[in-house]
Image 1 (cartoon, rainbow, N blue to C red):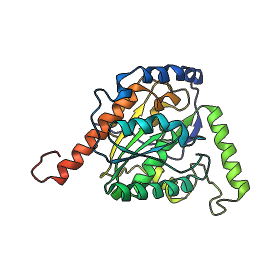
Image 2 (cartoon, rainbow, N blue to C red; image 1 turned 90 degrees about the vertical axis):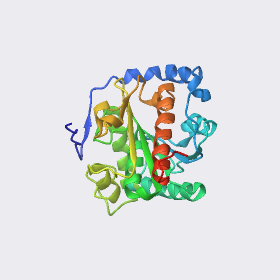
Image 3 (cartoon, helix red, strand yellow; image 1 turned 180 degrees about the vertical axis):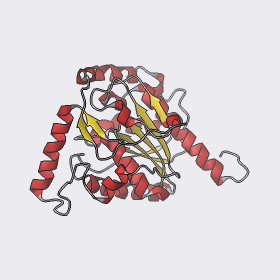
Image 4 (cartoon, helix red, strand yellow; image 1 turned 120 degrees about the vertical axis):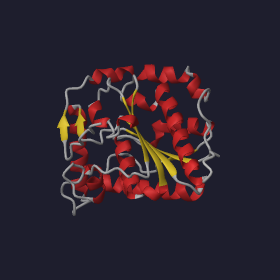
Amino acid sequence: MAQLKKPTKEFTAANLPIWHELGLGIDWLALHYSPDYFGIGIPRGNGSGVILIPGFLADDNYLGEMYFWLGRIGYHPFLSKIGRVADCFDVLVTRLLKTIDRAYQETGAKVHLVGHSMGGMLARVAADRSPEKVASVITLGSPFRGIRSHPLVLELGELVRKSIKIQGKRPDQPACFTAECSCKSMQALNSNQPEERVRYTAIYTKKDGVVDWRACLDEDPAANFEVSSTHVGLAFNPFVYRLIGQRLALSNSKRDEKSNPDGKVA
C-alpha cells in the first residue's frame, strides 16, 4: 500500500471553516451524557502512566476532564507541566521529556502520551527522542505533516515567534518557532521516520476548522481514526474518549505479550 508523503517545513494558510468550532458545546454536552464518560464499556487500564499535552496557546487546565476520566478507568494520569504552549518548540519538548522521566520513574514502566493539536506534535517528537520510555502516542487533530492552518492561527504563531525573538530566548536559533528552525526537536518533527518501538494513533476530524485534517494523518493508514468533532472539541468528544481507551488497552496488551514468552496477556 502506498504511503503518504510527509511535507516538511510547511507553514501555510488554509481556507478552513473556522465557524465549525462553534459546535464545541455539542462535543462537551455529548461527552457528559455518554456512557463512555463513566467508563462503561471502556477497557480497564493497568495503572500505566498517561501524560496529557495541551495544544497551541493553551495550558494543562482544559485537559482536566480527560485527566480525571483516565484515573476513573484505571490509569495513572499526568499533566504535562510544560506551561502555556506559546514558547520555543525545543524548550517545550525539553520540559515534556522531564515529565516523561518523572512518570516513568513513578510508574516503573513506559508511559503513553496523548497530545491535542500542537501537543500531539510535541508528543511525537518526545517519543522520537526518548523511545525507551514511551509505549504509545495518540494525537488529536495534530498537524505533524506540516502546519496548514487557518490564517488566524498562523498570525498568532507569528506573534509567538516575535515574542521569543524579542525576549532573546533562543539567539542561537533565529528561525525559532518556524519550520525552518534547525533545533533537534524541529528536525525530529520534519523527519519521516517514526520510532518503530512506539505505537502511534492519529485521531482527526474532517470538520476541523483550525488545521487541515490531511496534515493530521499518520503514514500507516491503520493508525488513523476519523471522528465527527470540532478541532477544540477533540479534547471532549465521547468518540475520542472511547478510541483513547481502546488504543491504550491495545498498546498495553501488546506490551504484555512481549513480556510473556508464553504469549499470555497479563
